[in-house]
Image 1 (tube, one colour):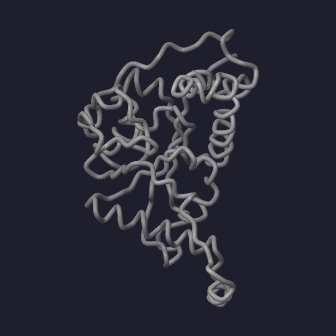
Image 2 (cartoon, rainbow, N blue to C red; image 1 turned 90 degrees about the vertical axis):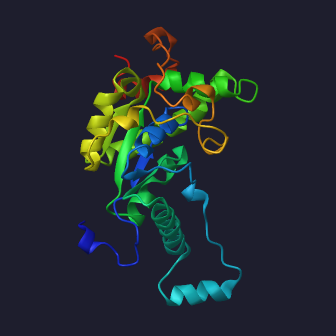
Length: 250
């Protein structure tokens, strides 16, 4: 759908959504893209939990008379919030990266038919291991595996439904960040900028717990090496199908 054919009540044009699991390097990617002069990448916005409620049957009936259901109103709210934030930034395009977007992919696509999607993959066992290590008491390893599998399967479903999206791997970003940023910039139609590789040291004002990664590595302002990939014998059975689909295991 061209921009001219988009619904007239959408203010935002060509928003960019990073679709990924938790613990997949999405905060690093957000920081790198946000360092671009034309891309604004705020902290996680959790749009799917930004909801509209009717106080009684009357406003519900009133909105139905305007052919607006609750989901339509939520889409208008999402669009207004992101458009406002983009205007505040003074940049051209907004980038949103909440991992929960993997579960709201179809609604996001319905809300913005011209949205661009970046699918960020990471070795599934590394994702599970990192999720477990972030709170080992709350999340024993088996629990972490079950948790991340939901995300991984949602990411793959969205990726399969979006042949015109762009897929990147966390391991490739950490191994050759310039090559991957050049590739992403080409997909987004913006020129590559070297400053994306050194996005600058961050503090508590930039990295808030619960709205993205806040740990030491991401605060350094530069790309840090990723952890060594697990061997095939370290991959738990529930994660093997996704590992195979993503080319991480035979």
